[in-house]
Image 1 (cartoon, rainbow, N blue to C red):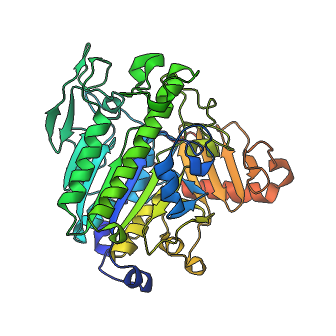
Image 2: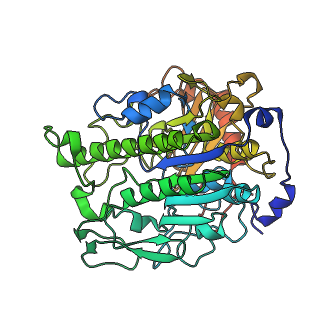
Length: 462
């Protein structure tokens, strides 16, 4: 049986803590966008792409400077978020494609944050992109704790912003678009474009909030912006309007990329306004993040607007530019406005955080640590990680305090960077810090367990 199977539910019991009783049981909205870089928001240093709503969200809440995605590509990052474990323990560790539609599905009985919250009395919804199981699979969102699903099951399908259909639970919802030479997985490039999928997902999210305003709910809003339509080549930054960027002397893909981000920013603003209009903003914790670093796809150049900010690397790298992501938390009256934290955290921390907020204990065996104390300004009560760990294809990496280690392949030496002095990971100090490298090697070895679907290239492990 998989180590994070239904058996772990035996270890989940109703409980409470001083923090939970002080904070109450809030609604939870987790907004994850797709391939947004650490430097793509104004509140994280962006100078040219306009993000006034998210900048205001940061001014009204808490901004994390040292938060990390679950991985450097989509599916494994989302798996870590849903299951509370890092890449060395996760069931999904890469974008493993399944034909005709979908990616490697989560197995039956997986304990997800959605299942835990659902069992705790929350109404749960996933709107947007899933990537952890296609139609009729064990990984379908309705089989993994979500009462309601609308959007894309398959990541390849999600490349296309003008698809011929989306899914509502198990049923296809037809859109008014025409895709030339349509594929079984729904991917492709539309020749007739009328219905922009992102707009439909935003409308569904607002409707879900409205319908559940009088009961506790968990909304996982997994927006596809600003991912590229990879099937469209250098014209992959698909957006209905270039908006404020139309007349700039920029390459077309950069106009599209910026317009996508600003469109998404405005929609986050609509969601926050809806919470206020319904009188539930003080009862709702909203978190905003990205699934990994910025991409170089669809004609986009991540250097053009400095999408990774001061960091090195992009999507598919395990340098911080590929995995360090924005995290903004807003909860009026609970999360202090205009604050910043350098608490080192990662996607796998969300599951125990959500459990503590909902008044239940997290399952045994997860890698995450609740960051609720940090959210509530009780930093003296915040537990810290000994280290964070990632593995992807031939690469592995760890963050241990101020130290960041990257190993690109089994034949490569471990690189070591002092992030306090070298945020951009430019000066490898492994040779001058052999004791730290030894600690990193121990962490690498203990963090990995074998997974049949993703062979480990560093030799036989337990």
